[in-house]
Image (cartoon, rainbow, N blue to C red; front, side, top):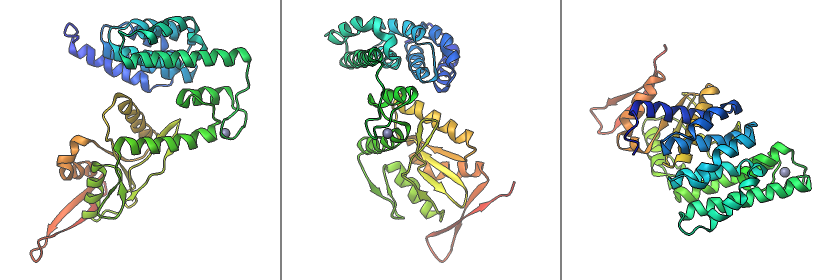
Amino acid sequence: MNSHIDPRLHHEAFQRALALGRGTDSGALSELTRRLQMPSAEIRRLAASATGKLASFGADATVAVQALSPIALRDPHPQTQQYALKAIKCYGPAGRAYLHDLDDLAANERAKDYVRRAAHSAAEAIREAVRLEQEGAKHKCVRCGREATAEEYRRSQQAFQRTFCDACFDEVFLDRRNSDTRVELNKTIAAKAGALVQSEGERLIADWLTTHNLAFRYDERYRILSGHAVRPDFYLPELDLYIEYWGMDTADYKIGMLKKQQLYQQEGKRLVSLYPADKARLDAILRVKLELFGYRISTRTSPASASDSESVSHDVP
Ligand SMILES: [Zn+2]
């Protein structure tokens, strides 16, 4: 696929589209509309997703929906189509001109099921947004009853298709992320130190830390940073360092992952990222990554014992 495109240019365009997806500048919309017309389905998909995100940052809804609609309705690549449909949905009433087309797509038996569902969901959201706009309705938080601001309304509708004030949004978001995580990984695993972790990768990390006498806190609490849920998997208080295990492999998850890694960086936190591919060579990889922060894990084998006695030393820079 895309064999006629110079791989280096494609890579650059891909990275650029990813970066735009992490951005919050509604001025990026004009660049994104150009990328929505590129020959690579992958780049159109990322550009569509990024365009949807800019809805929360005040991007021009009419321009965005116009650029997204051909992709949403007719893109030859169904996954790209699905992303554009999700993105259109973020712009609410601005999609009203395409309601009939969306209904047709939702009813089209030749389209992929997930595309039809996305079209249906977009049409429903647009209808509801139009209805609310027409009513000039005041939006009340469905949880606490407080009147929600327009921004709170848009943000919570986008995430939950329901209205929440910011305080309730955060709580509901946490509940949902916790339950999503449980569904996705569907396990609770006891590590050596007694911590209950949520995946095999996390268990290996917990056990490695225990073996190397590194105190850690395994924390299930989320914090919301600029609207993103960040749950540090491991915090090592002696080293003031975080370890995150990025265990999933979906495009959405990866986009979220890059955003979170950026948040750590912005907050000046020291982060070691580990991935499923690292599991087989966890010991070597953790040693190298900790050394980058100036921590050397030494292994001293006692002649009297088969077991290793290990310690961590901090090289003062
Ligand atoms: Zn509320």
